[in-house]
Image: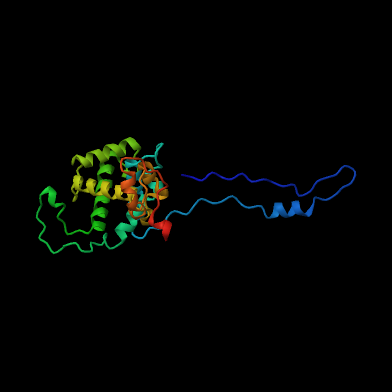
Length: 234
């Protein structure tokens, strides 16, 4: 969302006084010379692991799952792509504590995906596969589609009807949806849920330790306080 340019005032550097020919006050000249320039647009976030194509994909996905409305800003404005980048660029994204020795037969749904890929590798392959499919179907990458087309693509992934090369569409959709929702509802210290927007929407007060002693007193009644995150105590 582009910043609005702040109007700048132009000060007169000289003024004529009828019959006097007086110069402008020095203060006016100084103000004109040192007027504050309009602020430039904020720098885009520096990602630790996401490529430009991947960041564009996750931005489009986050904004499709969470469009701006009267309750919250759109997903990308809530820092969800930053959250995803940090997760995939960290130990979890690298497959820490994952068993990767094989074999990897197809498991039952309740066993989750069976793969030698790390989460980082799985998402990279999935993004490429989805973009290849949308190029074939719409002649555009996913992030270049309009909102209705992106919604159609996500529904096809969810239903397992997208023909993805080397990736299971339903598994990829479930992983994508989960990480977007985690970024939406997680503590803002992890990069997402900027401004604690989702917590405010739900009426969630934040850190449980701050209200654990009030649960019995407020049981069955609205406990309305500004939400607090770990960042508020850092």
